[in-house]
Amino acid sequence: MDVKDQFRRWNKKDSGVGEMSKMISASILSADFSCLGEEIKKAETAGVDWLHIDVMDGVFVPNISIGLPVIDSMRKVTKLFFDVHLMIVEPERYISYFRQAGANLITVHFESTKDVKVAIAEVKKSGAKVGVSLKPETPFEEIEPLLQELDLVLFMGVEPGFGGQRFNPNVITKIKTARAVIDKRGLKTLIEVDGGVNEETIPNLSKAGVDVFVAGSYIFSNPKGVAYAISKLRDLI
Image (tube, rainbow, N blue to C red):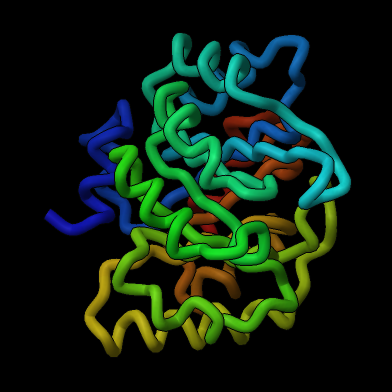
């Protein structure tokens, strides 16, 4: 069973959405936190594959979001796959705690730690899937030697920290390069993109080789509703 299938086992609707080769991860950063449980259920009912959970410390990025207690509470209301994106300094110090709170995949930023290999090892030790994320200006080549250790590479389409930004088109080139390298080496590493994903950008991202699409504002702030947004994105990939 390849890593995509292993990931899909966490999907509650394994016989439906889980059969698709490309997945949508709904970013709760854009959800209404006054009724977060209801927002999660809307996304789950609409058939989203994963929940993307941004953890920000106000140091690595100029924003503060949520922490361990919120993730632990979320885990009690859903069985969806938790795609936890750590935008914090020295993430290796907290890996085990996020795993205990319910993270299925833990992604650390290449730029947030003095030794990304240590952080990767900590994620593997915890039993979670492991991802490494790159800011828009960080070259893909920085992590190319590590690909065989990774379940996922996350390309930021915007500067991390705030939702609702416009996608940086220069990131497409990095995605295409990564897709070619992963395929040539016969690796199962997934490619995820986060930031600026909407109905305008997702077709080109899909063609470039993205496997997992993180969308927040487009899903949770869509005037036509969460179900419409997820269905529209799925049609376009």
